[in-house]
Image (cartoon, rainbow, N blue to C red):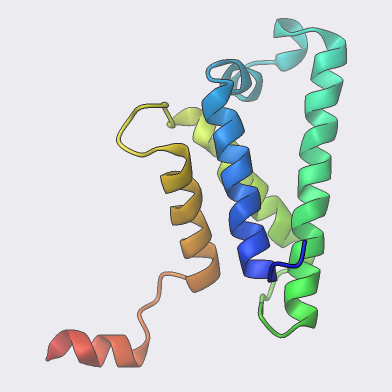
Length: 130
């Protein structure tokens, strides 16, 4: 895609959350149970492989972002990718479609947190005092 790494990361997170929303509760059962005892072995292998492909995609996006000077992280790209996938996978513990937040709301909130952090800049702090 010709999009910048930050847009690619956000969009990829939306795709994952939309899949979780669309395939609720099946994918959530997969992440919260011993999936090998719950679903077909071929499907289990495909879901695991899909997760690895997604992690590789995030790793590639992070490397592109670093190369382009858009991202800076103290984590190796692979560990950063595992952080993103871990955040998304953990939604299996609390996300419910048609709840307080939709799939895009969750994905965008997570992307904002990853891309912008949670620390308020000095300029923002000064503006808040006025």
